[in-house]
Image 1 (cartoon, rainbow, N blue to C red):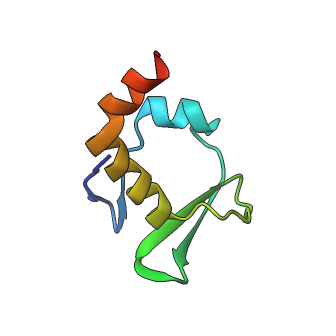
Image 2 (image 1 turned 45 degrees about the vertical axis):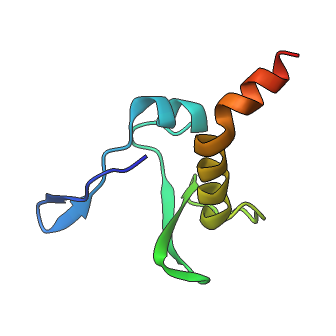
Length: 82
């Protein structure tokens, strides 16, 4: 999902779609933690409730899964129905 960084006063923001908020349990006014990914200077990590959660699922891993799903998603769906 690509979003555009927009100016908001003297800062910048990104619109988070409602379905993504709902699926993560985040709510308007909720606390989040933003930090740079130590392994990738161009990646920002957003954590729920302002707490760090250790995870082996990295943004790079998610990109790889997304690319595999785009390429082979229809095949996986067909296999799942058999």
